[in-house]
Length: 146
Length: 146
DNA sequence: GCATAATGGTTATGCGCATAATCTTATGCG
DNA sequence: CGCATAAGATTATGCGCATAACCATTATGC
Image 1 (cartoon, rainbow over the protein chains, first blue to last red):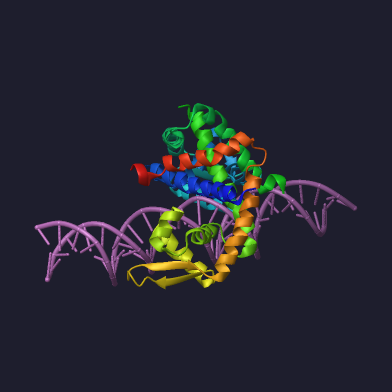
Image 2 (cartoon, chains in turn green, blue, orange, red):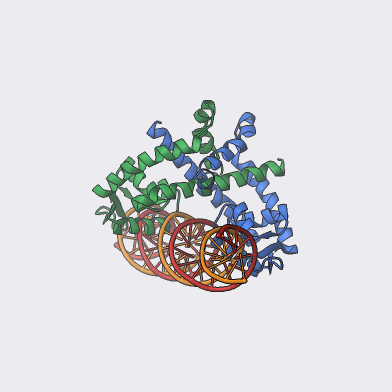
């Protein structure tokens, strides 16, 4: 492959990551949230209470990160962490009412973020875009291939 | 816009960011580099010595981040930081020989990373992809609009 | 020509991510 | 059973990013 193309591609992905995350942080700040925490709330709102291991899998980040993030969301009052009666190792994490309310607000913010992001892209591109991004994610995911 | 589409899009971007960065980190680790440092070396290799403010602009991250990253790359011996004689506030950053050699290796790694990333994507998509990513980046970049 | 603003850097602090090591509980197998 | 192994979670540490506050230098405008 052409090294210039490779460089342009990797750089573009890196820049998009930085900027998209930065913009998300701007939008989430008024809610008292930091970028990354919204994924926890949205996931819990989608599928209900989860074990931290399941949450880790869903978020695509490692267990230690989940421990710290959930702890902070707990002290903020948006999440409840209770020991799993069926498995004494596990702790199940669930949304509080405040967390549910926040999830709704996040979803609204995310519509505006998505609209900003795709501005001026043709409709045909928009139809393919989620699939393209998903393909690239799984392509580069070490856990599935290796 | 459809909230589900927005959610899927934002989530896909977040996941791609995490995974692409994680894979980059895996590839860079044997070189003794951490994800993010490669951008410094590649940029300096592209355009030559830079003031930190210019580097900050080019990398898309804030000056304090540049201070810390360049310091670490300096102690690793891949970069030289010298005071700018023309402007006593500025410090100019340049690659050492070791840094140049590393930049070459990074470019090779980035070809394999890019090839992995775009596996199974149709050629038509590949032609548009850099433009799409760039459009989204600038769309979501606060500094241009706000 | 001097006060004021703007620019370049750094320090301090905090968050999200990572890996490595450790502890506890579950589970599989002889 | 009992014991080795796996799985869930945490602690410690380190990096890349951010913002806020601060200092030193340069540029600006009356």
